Length: 255
Image (cartoon, rainbow, N blue to C red):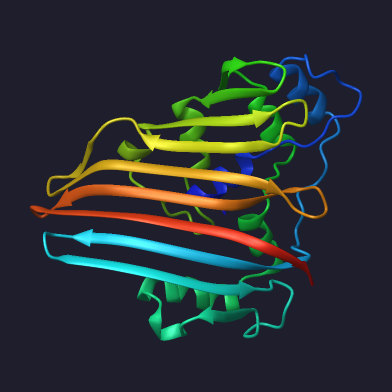
């Protein structure tokens, strides 16, 4: 499933590489890791707390604020995976409620894992070691890298049904910057953003699209997506719109 969230997840590629000094450069570390890359986990052995905060605006007078909290157990029986803690199902916005229902009833273990782990496979490691990635700066503690527009477009191309996640014009103008700790190569922060305002259709213009993500080590040592922040704004049919969304995953408990 190639999607924007997948781009973040597969960009968080690296874990500890024993026997290599911290002074090694980023590309050398990645190449060494690619030679013995482990398979990406296909299950999530934890339940976890999801906290959501949304602030949206459409036009001058139509605004909405929403906060919610629920516990998700991917290993539970379908229909019993989501436990609402703050509020009720009906309190959630329509689109968000649809995603919750899919997670509760329809997602496979692999789909849950894809949205949870910040781990990439050998193909992704090789991509990070290629010319598609530029090291902007690094020292013994961390490395900051960027992806070429073509590499970003590759990950944001089609989903499983062959449909585009966003217009090609938008994808071509997205930039990405990732920060990795060294020598562990754990992704500590990533950001993908629209480099300049872009007209999608005659009646629609995207002014801002920012996606930021943080990863933290789970109890088993593997990195997982602990926080996602999204900010978008634009204009459609003469009316301004915007939204900020913050999602955090915490309190991981063994299934």
